[in-house]
Image (tube, rainbow, N blue to C red; front, side, top):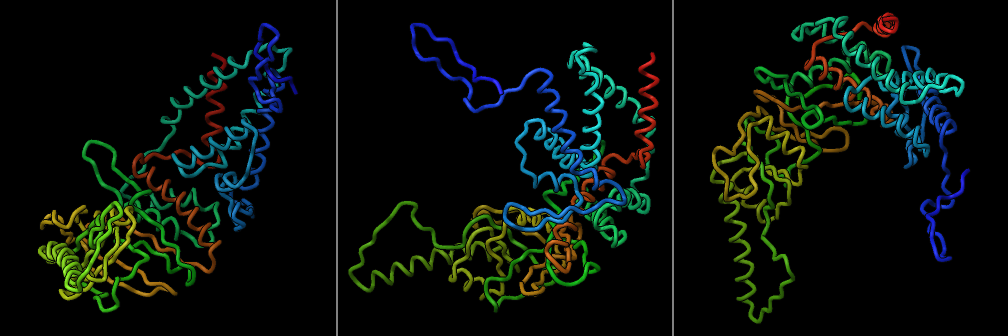
Amino acid sequence: MSYPQMAPMGGGRQPVLILNPSAKRDSGRRAQLSNINAGKAIASIVRSTLGPKAMLKMLLDPMGGIVLTNDGHAILREIDVTHPGAKTMMELSRSQDEEVGDGTTSVMILAGEMLSAAEPLLDPSRKIHPTKIVAGYMKALEDINKFLPEIAENIDPNDQDQLLRTVRASIDTKFANRWGSMISELALKAAQVVKIDRPGSQPEIDLKRYAKVEKIPGGDLSMCRVLDGVMLNKDVTNGRMRRFIRNPRIVLLDCTLEYKKGESETSVEVTKEADWAALLRQEEEEVQKICDHILAVKPDLVITEKGVSDLAQHFLMKQNVSVVRRVKKTDNNRIARICGATIATRAEELTEAHVGTGCGTFKVQKVGDEWYTFLVDCKEPKACSVVLRGGSKDVLNEIERNLQDAFCVARNILIDPRLLPGGGAAEMALAARLNEQSKL
């Protein structure tokens, strides 16, 4: 523990504290060893979750829920650490999870071993400055990036069996491996549905925005599937509206279907009954105008992100139009992608070009205790929903984590169809090559 730093003051005035008096400040070899030990401690936490004999960790999250997983990033995310070196290691795990999806545990263990290898080099008797050690690691990284493409094997992105084996190789060490290739098949199908080919460049595969996972407790895991369309936890606004439509004409809105209220507080004094009736009639006429603009494009289904008044429901239901309200923005974007509709911000702007006709079937079904809206059988769905069924919420949460990893692997292999040898073979080849390079 060192004393707090103080700025010198003249004239007998009190010194100004720059650091918190209770702050702990380490420097030199003591700080280096502290960072190395913190990194090794973090690596040791996830070490037992690596490989085919991986053990599941049972954790309590801050809300009191149970997390049952062997995913390195999911485990570290639930751990509260204060050491800056340990936090840096956890950021490394987060970056790996976002960029690659798999290998978070391997990255943490490799980083811990690299810190262990650097520890004897920091011995004062060897007189090696830390920046030289870092420069050596950076040089090794350059050589690795040159060597890896040489040992990579190209695979055929159109060969379904080869792609499936690749995805399974990263998922079979996880909790979902007991259900065979189910998770790998779901992830690969979802990635191929969302994939948009770009001539002369890499394909666009945005699984984060356009592949949504819906978890429904109950049923069996064999009931999991990828829909060729979108599923929403919504019902139509009125029970008398149609719940099944073939080849619906879909209108998507980002506006409210209600009488517009003033933004500031407004007071109206009514002295006669006729004036009150006139006010109600004016509100009804305004809502009728909005509905007339919508009905002019002859829709079968209207989906809006905002509210729908009882009056608007009445006018639309009279024309046999079904309505779904308060849909999330992300869900509305996915619906637009599957049916070819354009989201309108005002009902007055609607034209035939805004109407989506790419959806084959609209249906509302009760699954378990809740109603779900299905927009499926689409002609060219470029978005999808993955339905997961399972016996408990904890199992579904872990299956979803495994599925997210499989998503990333499937996306990466479709974007860059090259594969490195597994089982530590690539690492041993790199070690041999780096040994050769060190002797030059």
